[in-house]
Amino acid sequence: MPTLSVVNFNIVCALLGGFISLFGLVSFLCKEKFYLSEALISLLTGVVFSPDAANLIRPSEYALGSNQNVEVITLYFTRLVLGIQLFLAGVQLPKRYLQVEWKSLALLLGPGMAAMWICSSLVIWAMTPGLQYLHALVVAACITPTDPVLSNSIVKGKFADRYVPRSLQRMIVAESGANDGLGYPFLFLSLYLMKYTGMEGSDASGGAAKAIGMWFYEIWCYDIILSIFYGVVVGWLSRTLLHWAEENRYVDRESFLVFAISLALFTLGTCGLIGTDDLLACFVAGNVFTQDDWFRLETMDDSLQPTIDMLLNLSIFMWFGAVCPWSSFVNNSVIPLYRLVFLGILILLLRRMPAILAMHRAIHQIEKLTQAAFVGFFGPIGVGAIFYLSVCREALRNMTVDGEVRADSQHLLEAVEVIVWFLVICSIIVHGLSIPLGKAGYHLPRTISNALGNSSVQEQAAIPVDLLQQSHSTATPVSNLETFQRHRPVYEDTIATRE
Image (cartoon, rainbow, N blue to C red):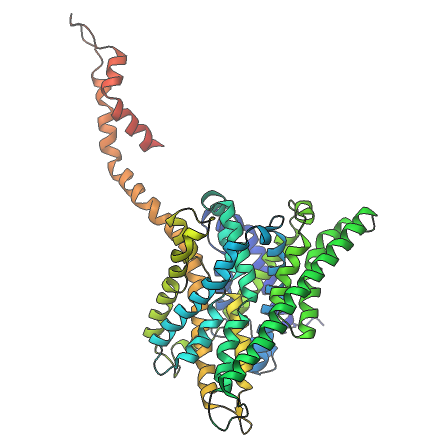
């Protein structure tokens, strides 16, 4: 006898497949006509199906009722999405891009990221009652990298092709790809200082000197330098092997097209095994892999990579909508809601804009002040911030006194979760709606003005018709040419209005 099987697996498959199919039917309309980002649409869909609404997506049940298991799932999900996205970001850059444009990238990834970190920490410190500045540095480090997933809505599509120069698009891709992996030094500098200069009686001692030493050894040497070296090796070997296989006709087309994605998974997994910075290694490996531009040009017209990219984006932001701690924005012991709202506004305005405006003359891709304002505003906070939030929470739980999590770490755990999640949601909504609202604000006044002036313009346009000489007067008739020249401005206004 047939029975219903309302289990989580069937529900998730039905929801995910149904949503992606329905979105696919109107995807061109949403992205190319209304300029809505797929991240915003997916997030709202996840909220609708979340435990706070329809309760069809149940993260707690998937994690066997453990909130820490939900965090682990989120961490690995963000790692997967970021690893593939960053590898593909490295692949889509042109030949020897990092070597040619290293000066602009050095400014953005060095002084630029440092300025974003400091500006964000000052705003967070000022707006959050009772939060120490060192703790504000920890929170700010999570939101310092710009998100490569949300950046795709800026550098891809009809809007980008029409309004964003190609050189600026590539710079945004390169910056968002590289700085996600470079968030570790900012996060762990503040975490190590907090750990080794924190409460007395803790299980970590040594002061600031030990914190700086551990930061140089573990973060810069093992995480950053090793990941760059490993990414170069993996990218170069993979490119050499693929050239050899292609020349000898050992690889078929399907395997050739999926090679970049499988290589991203390999890089992500092996870096995770040795404990180094997998995000930076994926970006470097992707760029070295296409150092000669051969693979990028061969797959330029193929849709497999953008398809995988879209599936991952829709899935991750649906998950964010379901697992976001919405109630904690109102009920928390860290920051009241009105301060949280002002914090979100100030971060979006001051996190990135001052640094870009100060440096834009030294970055040749930014030719105008309006472009500098555009790059300064569109520095989205998204998947990368949630990844660093998960890394931060894991590190804070390891700061213990007599086997218990330290009091300052416990307070910071709540603060970093509430603030980072709220800023991610703000960025997804604001950056997802900025382009359609901006275009509506540009066209709406002109549309209203044309509509209100339409009748008067039409009446003026009828004047030349009345001036045509239809009587039997002996006076010299006015020629059509003279009539047109006399009323030419009226004609031109009428034509422009009708168009």
